[in-house]
Image (spheres, rainbow, N blue to C red):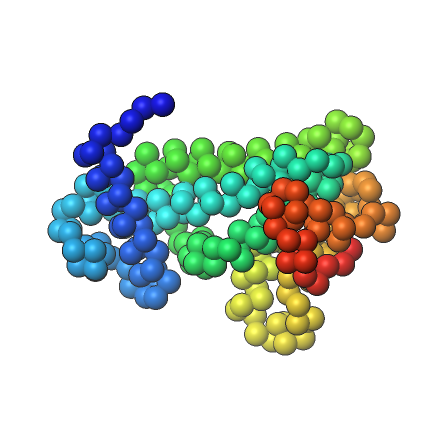
Length: 245
């Protein structure tokens, strides 16, 4: 394992400081309120020093996206190693996403803000590649489980569809439900107060719709979540509250 030089450690630590300040500023001021001058002033460096690390505001924001996705994929990869049938492991993936949001709320909140802006195209090739790499790990964890389900016969893909179609639906539902729960006031007033439980029910309904066995009517996925909390994430099963199939 290579050892970083003192200079390399200083560069790495300074970059981390810039990202911490940038994330705080994004959450406090929003996308338009974040700029390189303010970041440099807040961190006590020259603007030129900030630009040595990130070539533009979008490049910096892309780095925040990468940092967020790296945190999430750690949870996903732990879930993917959980022992059980493929749909149980996918349930563990969903639990991992819940735990990521709960344990790193600032990362999740900033991700919601960043996903509404076009950042990727304006970021440096280095940050673009970093985003591709970490997204590939996320997709690999999720779609690998779905592929296992097809291989073992727990799920049959309808003609004209593939596992990526289903995984795209799961991603869109998970992200969309969290955003809708915050911005759609009228809907939020009409639906059940436990938005996490609503999300879980919809996730199970989607997997049932794809015919992924065992169906939610045939299996206790609440028990699966409790077991995954303990075995995959070393958390107290009691911490997984409001469970239902």
